[in-house]
Amino acid sequence: MVADDQIPQKLLALGWSPFFADQLTEEDAGLVPMRIATVHRAKMSALGASGTVRLMLPPLCNTGAYAVGDWVLVDPDTADLGRRLDRRTLLQRRTEGAHQQQLIAANVDTLFIVSSCNDDLNPARLERYLALANEVGTTPVVVLTKADQVADVAPYRDQVTGLQRGLEVVTLNGNSPEAAQILAPWCGIGQTVALVGSSGVGKSSLLNTLTEKSEEEAQLTGSIRESDAKGRHTTTSRSLHAIAGGALVIDTPGIRTLHVSDITSGLDQLFAEISELAPDCKFRNCTHVHEPGCAVRAAVAAGSLDAARLERWHKLQEENAANTPVVTGARGNKVTRPAGSRR
Ligand SMILES: Nc1nc2c(ncn2[C@@H]2O[C@H](COP(=O)(O)OP(=O)(O)OP(=O)(O)O)[C@@H](O)[C@H]2O)c(=O)[nH]1
Ligand SMILES: [Zn+2]
Image 1: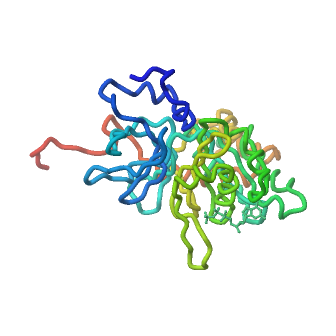
Image 2: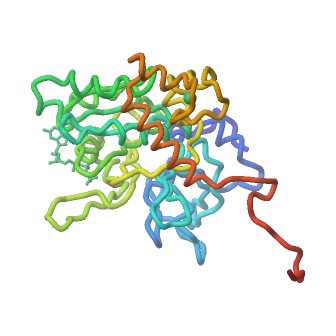
Image 3: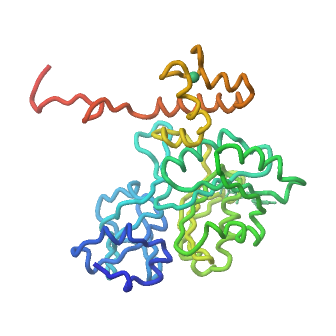
């Protein structure tokens, strides 16, 4: 294993940490760690201490199993892809009709949930991202762009700050260099941030502003921008970019609706005020819909809990329950029979 003092600074700047170093064994000698920068159906690139390489994939490689931000081991001579290291965090989402979760990004420290200071600002949409960030263990920061388009950002900020205890909210103009300073607290050396949000909220503009000072490095990652039907440039794939302050930024395509599953504890943290009232309900399994002695509905009646907030809680709870597989035993709810046995 490589001693800590031998690890090039460049690797640390890419987010390398003891969590990953501890996974290396003697058998990995000769391989170098690299971070996945782009993932396409049949090709992937990775960023390492010596720059960006196009990885040589083994036959039948399922690139869908890799996320931008993943650490992998690579043969430095051939660029052959080796083993993927365990992830510290993984952001994934459920796509309608698909069996598999779609991987958004891996090993992310901070999730920049991007929305704009305009009528598209939607608490219910932001809550979905917040629950996901909580569940995964990444710090959420709500970034409200287009602050330059409104006379007063306060009404927009106010809609967001109350969505979760201790939530950080920043307002900025994504096209102004000042945006990089505002986001600097989360963009230190080796930190990984991901930009998520609907199409058109300004993720790419923000990325351009953040990468401006390290044009050379930014270009290495080869993010793909394509024109949509209206001739607008729109992000079509995820990519990892090194930025001036020393952080790594992962850009993601606009998500129309973030469907949730497996985020039970993320929801509890998001809706802490509701989770904390529930033990005071008369029934332990109170659904806070119709039961007598419901402390949650009592709080709504007393004006200390917003009725719309409770409604959104119900909706997310239901969606999460419907999408989360119920595990009934050690083997889950699958019934398996010994080979050859008949009904
Ligand atoms: N005035 C102003 N315009 C902004 C700001 N942020 C983004 N825009 C503009 O909003 C439009 C959409 O921004 P993009 O950065 O392409 O949005 P996006 O989130 O990357 O969209 P997708 O790539 O489709 O996911 C562009 O015309 C930007 O110039 C901002 O803070 N202020
Ligand atoms: Zn109740």
